[in-house]
Image (cartoon, rainbow, N blue to C red; front, side):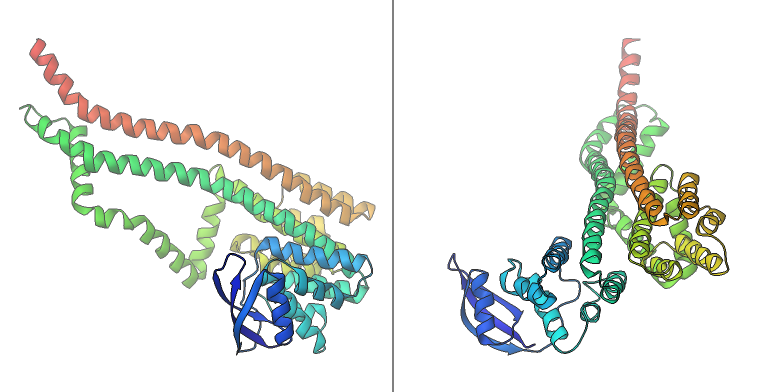
Length: 399
């Protein structure tokens, strides 16, 4: 399907430029009109797939939900995609739908058409859709994908909530300290030195830090950022270093267990989803390994998969790695013994979701007073170092 570069005008009279996939000129005009744009001129751009990773999560959920609902209502797949291409408000969503239509018309299945855009559709998602096409349960699979994407979006929001508040408070504390060191302390240094008495150790340390901030701020401020980029580069270049780094992340007090739960929750949900749609356990675990970015957990999953392949039960294989809490292992064991492993996996996913919510609330409740105490200690030390010599001088004068 050809792509077109267009120049159009919107309802507010502003010029809009962009690229869009369309069947022909009439289709191009129809798509732009549906978006509230009037075509001025266009040229043919290079053909190809949609820009990788260009579809927001919300629009991806919209795409999957739209296909699921129309398929459930008996609308053919091409009709559902054409409805999205012609009527969706989001231009990128319409481009994705147009790309899928083009590939399906050229003989691809929906799964193969989705696989051509790996930045939008993950390998697990493509595999699940392929399973749904083979078993004739595509609508049900799309429904499970919608639920999973919504859950993972909520999980991402929880993760951001866990990170953003401490980061904001830390930046605020850093800003206060820099202001005191660069502006306030230098104004008091001259007064303290002119008092004509021995300067206490903590005051000398404060003066040294203040001079360092004033004279070398250009080196101090970029250092944390350079350190972060340096660690990231080293982790990408060295597998052993990356393994140790990921291991250290899981060992961080208070926060580390929450990070581990978030990773395991995502794995459990993906594993449960694949198992319910008929994907074999070994294959499902192999895909879980691919979507796991934490190396210690990834290697534990690999060993678990090998144990299951060698005849071990799922619950025993997970228990041997001590990857999951004992409650989760017991839930899996009950599911295996009753023949309701799919329900057990769903319960495990629910267990992790609830546990993560409670853990994040506890961490946030703990972080606020801890950071407040840290800020109080820093400010208290600065005030002691500044006011201590002044108080000693006043005491000597009174004596």
